[in-house]
Amino acid sequence: MIMKLGVFPGGLLSLDLKEMVKHDFISDDWKDALTSLFTKETEQSLKLKVYSVSDSVTADRRRLRTPVRRSTLQLIDSLQISTGDFFWIQINKILSLNGVLLKPTEAVIEFLMREFQKEIQEFELTRLNYLTLLSLSFLRKIENLSIYHEKILENSAVCKHGLWAIAEDNSFYQKFIKEKAIMVSYLDNSSIKTAKDIQNIYNIHESNFLSSLRLTFIKPMIANTGILTFC
Amino acid sequence: MTHFAIQFNKETRKETLDMIEILWFSTLTIYKIFRKNAEAVISLASKMLGLLNEFDVKGSQVALFKIKLRLFIIGIIVKQRRGDISHAENEFKSEVKLIHELKSEIAEPDTIQRITFELEFAKAYLLYRQKKDRHGEGQKRFQEIVKILKDSCDKILGTLHYQTDIDRAKVALLLSKVHILNPKETTDTILKERLFSGLKQFQRSTNLKLALETSYSIGYLHYQYITRF
Image (tube, rainbow over all chains, first blue to last red; front, side, top):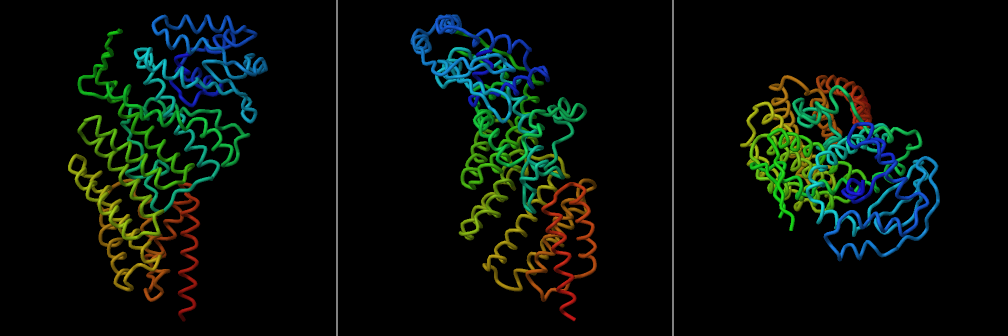
């Protein structure tokens, strides 16, 4: 769970996690995992959980051990977890969306990138698939809200004609769009009705989208040898 | 120290490339919509081009993706860099040169034609913008734009067999914009018909801004016609 959240530098909304379960990107035990970590727990028990992640790097362990938890124990009804700044994650309530944002700290992201490369690599395709669906859903929402319109010389993903249409033989298109028309449904929420509303959600996800340019994990999947070796 | 290796197969490679193509282009488009800073957007597109070079994968798919990114950059250059026209023109020429080089990696004749269409249309639009911003050289410039649109763009569209309606509508719209800037030019009935047909296409594909611009052009050209007599 920590690893799956940690690979999204901008964090994930609880709504994203629900959506990922819905489309079989992750299993539905994330709620239980979070609830067990953040409901009425003492800092001591949290520390123990973090220690069990890895025994290999003492410096990182020392950093993660430092208690920096500040405001906590405001229960979120739907999730029954506490909000606040924990030493490996920030949990903030997003009132407008009736959800929470779970954002891993920089130290945790760095630690995971260094120590859990194999696990991250295995999850990378799933992560990118979700971001692709999310990006297409953003474009659809932008179109539905009429906050941006195609220009005469547009040349972007807003265009759906000619050279700009997604190729019929694109495997992502065939798997998710052509027949199933899968989209991230929380963006369809009627409470998201202005350019500002959608921009606020985009601001959360911008670093996630930009992290799709992280070549460390993509390059081996595309390289001719097709082998990724970590030493 | 940990040693391990993960083996990827051909399917993973295709799946990843297909996904990256959609994800990066959508990411770039959303970034453009929300960030609105032309320099930052061009910088992100250039970064993507650099990363694609690092993949070291040859073939139509990657070449076409690179071309789309370069056409995207052209769109920003022409539309948003209005102050320094000569600089924009140099950037435009440099992107066009790189696209022509990449075109040699594309195998499908239909795709090559569509790329050529996009380049010609962008060139016509650049000249129109220069004229609109009073940087052109009078009547000669108008004729040059009309020539590109009619002799190149229309001709290419005539050779393509599907998905050309929006492109045709855009050509008609740009022709009408040129006519509006140059009242000496007489509007023929064919252009009017093309504009009405284009209006329907834009409405059908919910391109409301372009539909509105087409309606405005129809109205304005009609007004020009009436006031002439």
